[in-house]
Length: 370
Image 1 (cartoon, one colour):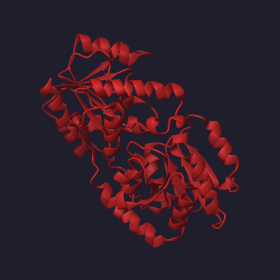
Image 2 (tube, one colour):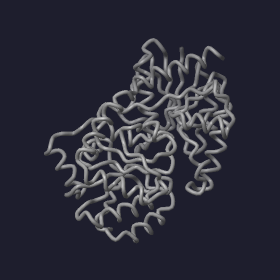
Image 3 (spheres, rainbow, N blue to C red):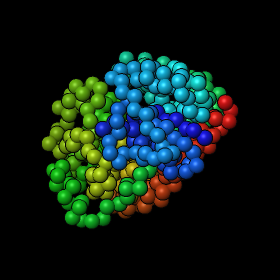
């Protein structure tokens, strides 16, 4: 089978959840299908060593500053289509002469429209709906996303397959005290800290997290909260929330942190504080569990599906509930140890090899259906 893959999101320099998924699933698919041919389509040249290239893995670099999906990729699909085109990040090109599989990550903009820019909300809604209805088969990254596709976009359930993310192998507990100390010192984390990971945007519920941390910090001198992630939409809302935190000097903004540093940052934390309003999957929670780091997350969207009984689940709209959860993790070493052990066991079942096998089955079914 000749599998074409839109690899444009995999080569983004600063990868977040969707980009991480694109890169990892492409790598794992190529490894899982040694007898198949792959063509990877890029809008820019990938970095050295990022993705394989060989007799059975061809690169097609189609530079375009704008409208790459609707322009250059569509022309390529019209001229030389593969047996099946896999788009790991939402949007199918409008012109495709082959079977198609699209991964839809989340429909959070349906649940919290005010937490997304109007233009982004409109574009995502149009693109997701069109792609989900047009695709031969659809991959949803969680049962929550599947249910939303059925409810909001009226996609037949028979065309949707849930394929959970995997967890990269380098996410594992870091036990070397010197490495933990060096990583903490680089980011001025000299005392116990909670960690948040994600783009700093309203959907991540940072305003309530900061208010909850302020309550907890009032009775626990020295406790820190470190926010890892690049600035997102409406940064002024985060600035305003920070200005109201009495313990502002104990909140660290670390910015974007490389993948290589995340396991040590997670391993040194009291826990991952991740009370997001909505997640299609919640990869930071899985990566924390793989590092035996306790997780506090929301009891909504996909997070209970991912975290299960391996974390503390709280109402993300209830500041006091978030604060209570943070306080329990800060004060109870046995609870942290128990959650860490359960989390690592649970995370072991989420592998990119398993995700690739399940994705490959969907690709084959789509190609045969065509």
